[in-house]
Image 1 (cartoon, helix red, strand yellow):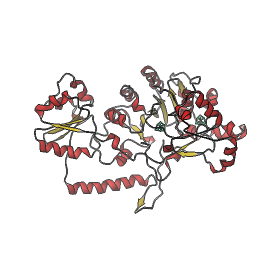
Image 2 (spheres, rainbow, N blue to C red):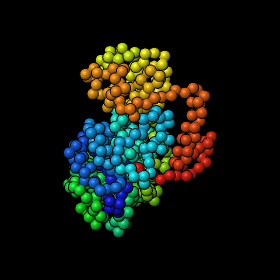
Image 3 (cartoon, rainbow, N blue to C red):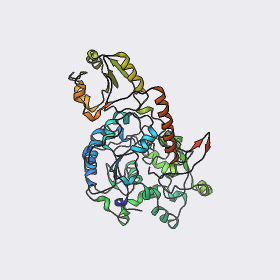
Image 4 (cartoon, protein in one colour):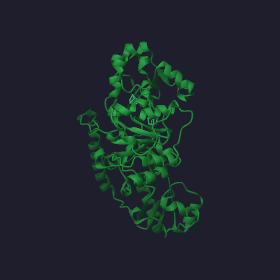
Length: 447
Ligand code: SF4
Ligand code: SF4
């Protein structure tokens, strides 16, 4: 086991609400009758307690972008951990995978210090502008892939493991050795799964959230190690496709889950493993050893689908009609242009790209802006937004001129993008040419 001070990442669990119900989720989503949401004072205390820690301080869930105060949390974290706001994701993005690789999923050794773990759902889109300013590390995994999740809720005693067999394995647990310590609303924990178990089973809470808590060493973990008795991360247990939705459990833990009213357990979305079955099958199980084991199946990659962050709709109007359009409370993009043909051309171009709702995109005299931008929000209710003053309400670096290129240039760009994607996938052991796999080079990443 490691001291949190030696970890590259320490997490703050701000909610356990999620849109997914993956198998064997480390936050046990699907088992809570009601999700929790950390309050801002606790969050602030959590962030401040990490002063002096030079790794990445992450916000995680569940899906953290669902938290009702996500924007306030992100801005506070960014103001404390980044020297200056990030300026990525302002130019239109054509291909998400190479973009992520180059800009938001950076290696751990580049001095990133504010991280976000998200499944890239529609609340990510709502906070796109803030996210790309406040986090210099984003671990995005849309869970539309075929990753494997290791069983978590199988107790070693129910599986028949003696102290002699189990304690060395527990002390070498891959999650504690490669993932993170965490802060939940109930305190600080040496391991993120221990923190989740404490939330799930209403445990005694963690260490007080105070400066320097993360300098504790394994000798100080004794009062939290009881959570490992309910957790199967350290020994050989089954793994399951995350999309299967069922959790692997042992009989007593199944009873404990039903007793707390777990919706997933009560629905029977579990696979129960008795001691006899475990002993019979254990030779076929293999615990993960490192952080990325769970991604290495069927050439899986983290983000397959960028639909959730594509523009949803464009309204087009003349400058003189902007007030009328705004009075109808539009939800997404508006293109204002004296010339309809130019507006349509801009719409067609932007529709197929990932664009930042916090920026204004210009083409000749047409401008595209979004009503969820921080620059426009304050002006919507008092009717002070006009074609002319759009250029005043946006900071200069968020006004992005676009060049609409012809078909042949687009074709060349596409070839380049495919090559880029090929390069990206190569790092993930997913190179296929005409269906034949030709490379196995893997680049190690953290979860
Ligand atoms: S997306 Fe993550 S947090 Fe949500 S259910 Fe799946 S594993 Fe759990
Ligand atoms: S066994 Fe579970 S609770 Fe214990 S350190 Fe490993 S992941 Fe954390």
